[in-house]
Length: 154
Image 1: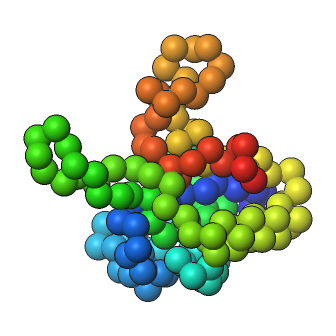
Image 2: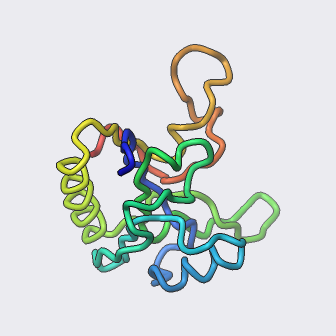
């Protein structure tokens, strides 16, 4: 049995409104040579919660933290935005639907009941503290994922 100390929230880094789930993410992860989907749970746009990798298996979602964590991914995280170059670019944004917000809260609460000592964080919260001030600030994030502040919301 694994000791779970972290519940880590991710986004799929897909454009707002792109409706995907475990099947598509599993295919993408296998293309990257993963054995299977790296996340344990996926929350679709309509709030449907899909099971990914079994929780007893080590995930593949955060370098150096997979052995002791559960990975939860919501679909979305990017929006189209015009750039200074006149082109449209995908940029990080909180694209969660109301249904996803409700489902994420319910799922994380259930997981926390199973793993009461686990800390709930976003992927970006595990970035290195480059300036050593004890805080992971936006300029230190390796990724914007999950595109909202998990610690203040969940």
